[in-house]
Image 1 (cartoon, rainbow, N blue to C red):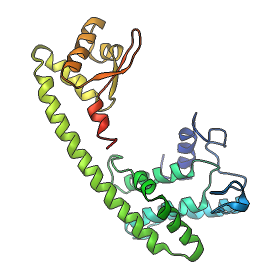
Image 2: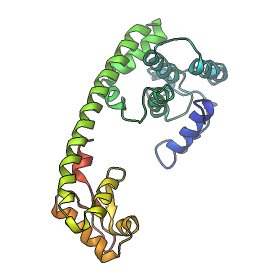
Image 3: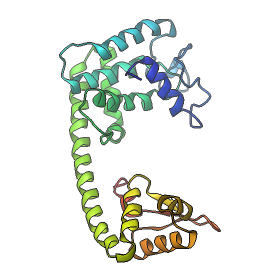
Image 4: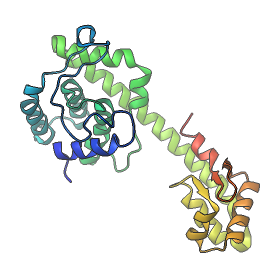
Amino acid sequence: MPLSLRMIREIHSILLKDVRGQHKCPGEFRKSQNWIGGHSINTASYIPPAPQYLNGLLDNFEKFLHADDKMHPLIKTALIHSQFEIIHPFLDGNGRIGRLLINFYLAHKGILSKPTMYISKFFKKHRKQYYEYLNNITINGDFERWIKFFLEGIIETSKEAVNKARNIKELRETHTVKVQSLLRISEKAIKLYNCLFNKPTVAVDDVCVMLDLTYPNAKKMIDKFIDLGILKLFVERKRNKIYVYNDYLQLFND
């Protein structure tokens, strides 16, 4: 599906399934007034456009997405995000969708090949400035400070992503050597280890299917990974215990 309003609605319906906002018309643009901050519209810090203006605003937004305006993609991404958040087209989940749009647009332009940069952490860290600069666009048309703030976020987030990638590479090299020490079972052990980077939690039944092993042999494999310090028990169950590649996950919490 191309980058479009239809795709945005589809993402919204998936994103709000069984989470906060699931009863606020997932996948549908709002037909009533919403607001940001405050217990009522009278105390709101920002009131988005009334619903009767949404069709025209969203039409302009979609045209801007695809306009061949020779604008630098990073600057355009900043404007796309601000435009979406100012319109605030859903009853809930606008922030989540708006942040996802950053990665979707950068991928659409070929700047990101994988979703390795997520700027939410920067926005959360500088929450006050984030809302202040967005509000300044609607109050006095100050796009310059917003764009500068956004680009600073891109720089900081990109540096963090590069460092994280280096740390993952170092971890992988160190633990691969350990796994290769398992001699007779090294081929299947390497396969299991590589799978942990896609799904860092695993149960014995998963290993049975993944490596075509019997339950006892799969359990032995996991026990060896525990001995090597790669896996540790995550969820205690009678039979199907869950194990986690904690060192890998921890890199994303730093």
